[in-house]
Length: 288
Image (cartoon, helix red, strand yellow):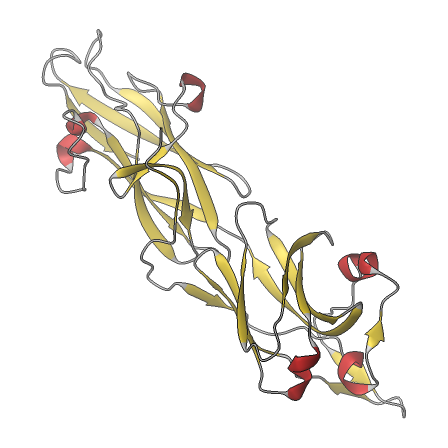
């Protein structure tokens, strides 16, 4: 039984990732609103381009700036949308987030007078470019794009006996034989870590053996949220180097960080082991 099913965003080095540029629907601001035939057109359309322009009645193209979106950024596990002070914002009744393949990723109603809102992204958004579409009924008022792409890197892996100050749980008297992984999300979208596994060790910790949780901040969690530009340390639920019958000898270890979004992350390590046996003062050294 877990102490907590999901942990919210840990302390970050930079907890928000802003959009570099907006991609807008030009005709919504120049020649009236563009009416869609239905919701499927909104979700599957391709109104956005990399160079947003509007065409006036005399055929001249001009660059369009947003009259609705002031800023769009990822904060923790949510997408924050800030609106301008324009009166046009009052015509928006809903914001839709449309995934890379045209699928509906999220949607939220906009109350009159709202100047910002947050939309949850986890656990099942699809990595890639997302359209943020402000609508009035079935009419597109404005839209922007944002790239949401998590990128988890394993920064460090270590064992308790060499790292006594890593915040090991007091509940575990064998913490010296447990293992941690420090990971960082260098991407633009949040990630959920579902498990930390080690193979090639005396006591494998894969989910196939029933270990389907991850330890973080001293308690067990089903998932750990890792926002962009955030570094966290997670711990194995059981001790990969728990004493068992066998020789204290070198081995090749694989660290696996299981994730909910995209591909899992793996790194290979050489484990030097020195001692008479695994049951008697076996010294462990982990190197890439």
